[in-house]
Length: 295
Image 1 (cartoon, helix red, strand yellow):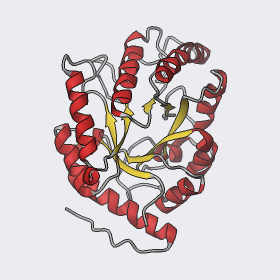
Image 2: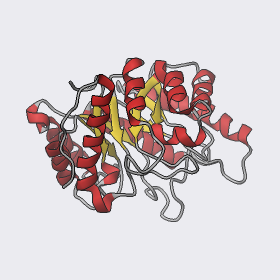
Image 3: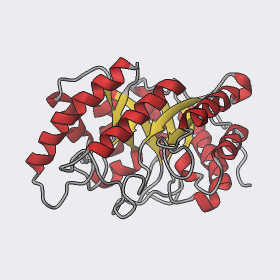
Image 4: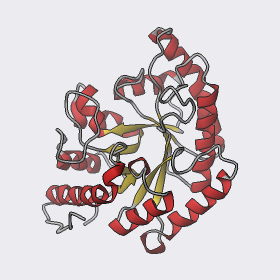
C-alpha cells in the first residue's frame, strides 16, 4: 500500500548528473515526484533557451511513471545564482531585492509551464545592517506582489522556514501569512530535518501547526544540534512518525528527499532513501514492504 502523499527526490542532490539523466534515475527507482531546483547546474531560468529547456522537462516528466507522469514542485534554493560571491543573496529581506524578486517571478512562470504543485521559497538571512523589524517590513511589502503574480498564473507559493533565517520556524511563517492576510495562494513548506533544530514542538508539532497551509514537504535526517542534511539513519529523525503524521493530517502533496550536499553518491542514496521511506511506511501500516536497497 502506497502512502497518500507523493514521494519525491530533489534534483539538488543530483548536481553531478545532467537533469535528463537524473530524472531517468529517479523514474527507474520509482519516485512519484521531483523537487526541481532552478539554477546551476540543471535549469537556469535566465538562460537564453530556458523556454526550450522547460518544454523538454515538461515532456520528460510526462513520460515518467510509465507515462502517467511525475508530479513536480519548483525549489528556489540554488546557491550563488544571483551573486557569485554571496550564497543565496540577495534575499527578500535585503535592502535591494530586485534580483530575488525577478528570480521568484521566473520560478512562478516556469511552475505554471510545468503544472507544478508549488514554488517553494525562503525569507533569507537578515543582513547585518538591518533590524528584525526592517526584515519583517520588507517581507510584508514584497510577498503580496509575489502572491499576486502567482495567483494570476494559477501557481501556489510555499514559504519555507529555515534555521538562521528571519522566518525560522513554522510559527514565524504563520505570523507572516497572517500579516499578509492569509492569501489562499500562499502556503508553507516544512523540512522535517529543520524541525529537530529549531522547532519547540519538534517535527510532529511543526507538521500539525502547519497542516492547514502545508503545501510542500522536504524529507531528510539531521542532528539535533545543527543544520546539516543527512541520509536517513544518520540523524535524529523518527521516519515512521513523520510519515504517520503526514498521513494523519491529510497531506497529499509532494514529500521529497532533500540531500543537497550528497551529489557524489546520488544514485545509491536515491535508491536507499526510497527503500527507507517504504520500510518506514510499512511500519506505519503494519505491513512489510520488501523494498530493495543498495546499488
